[in-house]
Image (tube, rainbow, N blue to C red; front, side, top):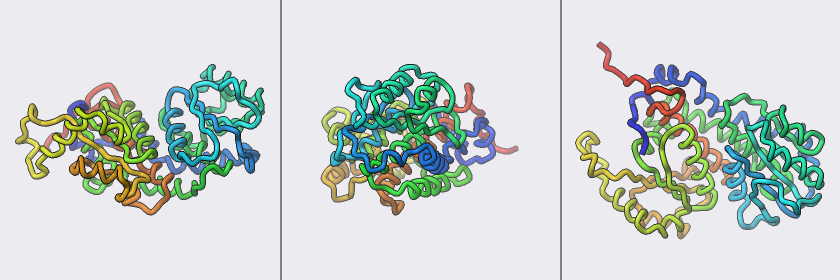
Length: 366
C-alpha cells in the first residue's frame, strides 16, 4: 500500500504547480511530441535502408531502465503471428549475423555493456536501430554502424518510454512486421495528455481518477490480453519510480492460478460498499487489495475477459478501446501514458516524488 495520500492536492492546481518543481507532469505530456520527433529522427538517420528486408530474427536488447518494458510491449504488439522470431536478451548473442536486426534503447550514455553489444552487432553485419544520447560510449559504438535516434524532445531521465517504443514500432513497420499508423499514435497521446491535464478535476480526469483508485491499496494489475499485460509491467515500473506502491502483475489466466490471492481479491471487491462513507470504515477490516483488469485487444466477448468479469465483477476494468477510436498500438500507448500520469499524481499527493519531504496538507482558509 502507498503512503498516506493528500487527495485534496490533486484538484488544487496552484499547489500541484508548486510541488511539481521539475516540471514532471508537462514532461510526461510530451509523449506525442516524443513519438513525432522519433519518427522524424529515425527517417533522417536512414531507417529506410531496412525497408524490404525480412530479418532472420528481430533481437531486442533489454538494458536496465525503460528498455525492457518497451521491448516486452513491442514483442506483445508483434504477437504470436509475427513471421520472424523475436528475441529478448541483455547482450548481443554470438549468433548474430547480417540477416538479423537489433533494436536497443538506453538513457545511460555510458552503458559499456550495451556499447560492446552494439559494436559486436555492427561487426557481425546486423542491422541496428538504437535510441540513446548523442554523446558517450554507446553513441560512439553506433557511429557508422547503426541507425542512431537521439532525443530531440527534452525530458528528464526515465521519461523516454514513448521514444523507446516509437523507435521499436518504426523498425517493425519499416520491416513490414507490423501495420500501424504511428502518426495516429502520436495524436492519441496528445489527446490523452489533454484529458489528463492538471487543470481538469478528478471526476473528469482519467489519470487523477486512476491515481485515487490506486491510492492506499495494493494494486493487482491483471492483463486480459498479452498487450495489456505488457502495459501492466510498465505501469508497475512507473508506480515504483514515483510512488511506494507495490503491485502484482500477471496475465489473468496466471493470476487465476494463484488461488489464495485471487480469492482474496474477489472477497475484497465483493465486500466493498460503494455508498459507504470512507471515514466510517474500520481500517482493520478493509482489504488492502484492489484488482485492476486491463484490456487492450481483449473484446467483451473474449473468453478470458468474460471469465474475469464473472469472477471479479467489481474489479476496475480499464479498456481504452471503449473510450477512443484507435488501433491496438495506440490504445496500448494511451494506457501506458495514463498510468505514468497517474503515478505522478499519486506520487505528488503522497509526497514520494518531486522532493524528499511530504507536502503540507491543505488547510481551510481563515
